[in-house]
Amino acid sequence: MRRILQDVLSPAVIPIPGPPVIAAEPVDIYVDATNREVTLVFNMTENPGLALGWIDVTWNASQLSNVNITGSRDALPFHNVQTMASDRLRVNYFSFTGDHTTNGELFTVTATVAAGVPVGQIELGISASVGNQLNTETFVPTVSPGIINVVSDNNNFIWGDVNGDGDVDWDDLFLLIAHLNDPSVTVFPGADVNADGTVDWDDLFLLIAHLNDPSIPLGPQTRP
Image 1 (cartoon, rainbow, N blue to C red):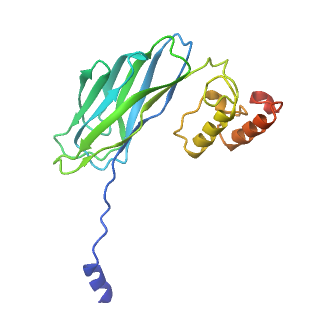
Image 2: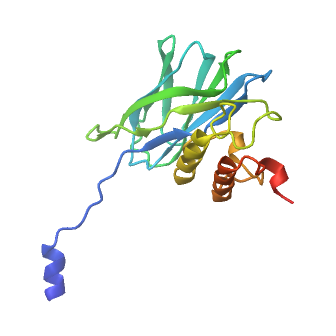
Image 3: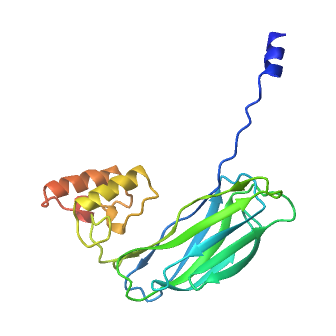
């Protein structure tokens, strides 16, 4: 009887849905690439149940051109793409059939990277607002910008050059630490300091050793 009364009198804990997450995996393009088109696929996770909303994509027109968006119906019901400005597109979603709770692909962006863009990062800005069918709940998603890494030639990067600036120094060490603690932090191909195909703590320890003693080699020559 006591257990029954506790169940009746104790309020049930109802989980409060959090905001959905929108992000894309970073992509690389070599600074001297002949084909300068890139593709980023944006996905949604932690979908709380949505039926409508919009997502804006912005970019720097001096870095990117021919920007095009293709909508997907995996996570939300794609409606259309609106041109809001010369450097801004809006993806609209709307459902007549209720809330969607599926995680998955939202949209794909293709763009052409301008010739002459230096080694570094290009960002696609993302902002959004989404809600459920009755619009009783509106969420501001957790978004990450789309990242395009402009990297040095595939056969010409420097082992240990984690940030792609052409030098191996303490800035590379700090960026590698940040990446190891948060893999969403972008690093360049030289982050695989020991050239074993994986960026991990072994690379960090080797980079520390090299910075303290530059005679310690980096790259493939560090492995038998």
